Length: 221
Image (cartoon, rainbow, N blue to C red; front, side, top):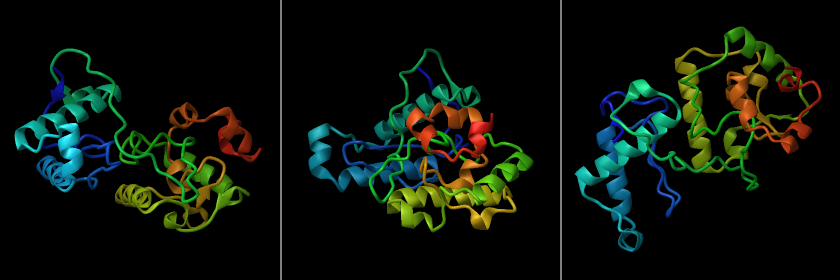
């Protein structure tokens, strides 16, 4: 069985968990032990669902669940240095609720889902991000405002965490103060300009592509 190589070193993006029955995910960047305790606490706070779905609140059992959950993600993302063991695990389940706009329109394009792609992973060179940002700064579908103006509170917290990681890596562009939300794809532009194009294109539907401004850097490749 595939497992995490250890429970000390964070996988990219931190330890992930998603409880679909209650649409809940623990705070990001908790240590493994604290994530286990957060899951147990959440399950105990929802006794009806706990009993209905047979959720375990045993520490060792939940630890194994969390380990396997993240090992499956690491295998899917080809982070093979983070896992050990034999066999090919099932594809990972949805890891966190997909960020949702206040209007209810899900974010489905542009950058890879923040559940999978994080700013602490692969990013494009600074000069590429800067050139992209220059185009976005004057784009008519660039909507200024705080992420809480566009996203639900839970999704905004996730995005702000990515902004914190971005800052810790000293990733910036000369146009940061002009970058808001792409109204075509629903992506935070200060993150999107650093995303590898191959990841953006993976989630770019024909419908969203048609909403992009003709000058968009995505269409120039």
